[in-house]
Length: 367
Image (cartoon, rainbow, N blue to C red; front, side, top):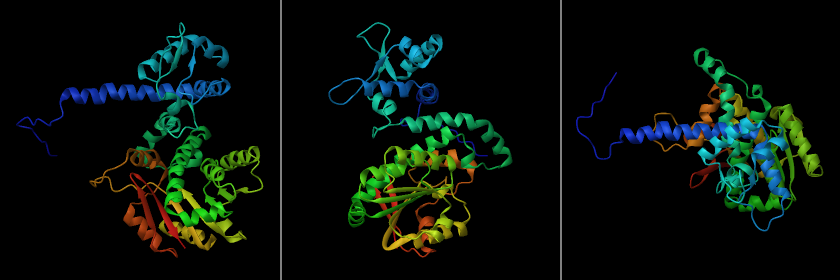
């Protein structure tokens, strides 16, 4: 063990006051924000505020929505005493503020409508925050697995929280689509004119929906092995009347690759690889199947967090580290840039291209 003693004070040294603020005040507010948002979401408060905002006539963009505790109690059948305690902490955390236009009325704080009420906002953080909240329900299992090394299955998670993970992945999928749209202009045109798209591991269809709504002439196939996700995705297809151009199938990739009668202009693998069997030979077989499903001029787009070794000096992104931490109990396996290239170059694909824009990135792999 090495103990380091500071003999002289460095002006740049972090003070005890700064550390107390960081680990006590900020941590407590952050934790309470996660808990308050998670409870509010589970009992239906944030969904109620969103539906209320849609039903009210307004000109221009909605920036805030107000309410009373009595209103929430009546509409959601919730206890006033609990609501009062919940709102008091929510005010302290900055999610809401007092609405001075009426007595005993609150409203969303600046930008909170976009961040936590409107799920369609490009700034929406609800899924990420709810993911943190959901981790609390996994702590007992996680603690036990620290001692045993046991691994869980993603499909063993409660469906509500697994769906939240899918929402988080779909948010990253929007970034991947944006990079594809900007840097793969020829392939984008091909898809726009009526190309064929396959998403492997489509889950609840949340990421696939982003592509469906943007590429109106394209035809899509989504495959997955999660029955609940497939059921949800099929309902969305029915509800939006997409049956003429979207097909959702409950089938493993290897089976689909053997039976498919058509090939694709574009295949999407978004935040799925780390959930697959970590065996290297199995993953090579995955990319061989993907290769066989692509047209000769087709491309594979892979959205996947790259997580270097813990003790490298690289500038980590919080979401990447969080991703690894939340999934450590599931036997996930991640790659850095070098190891991912090695994996791809060991298959029929060659020379994967890493597309970066600021801190966003994805892989473009051509046949």
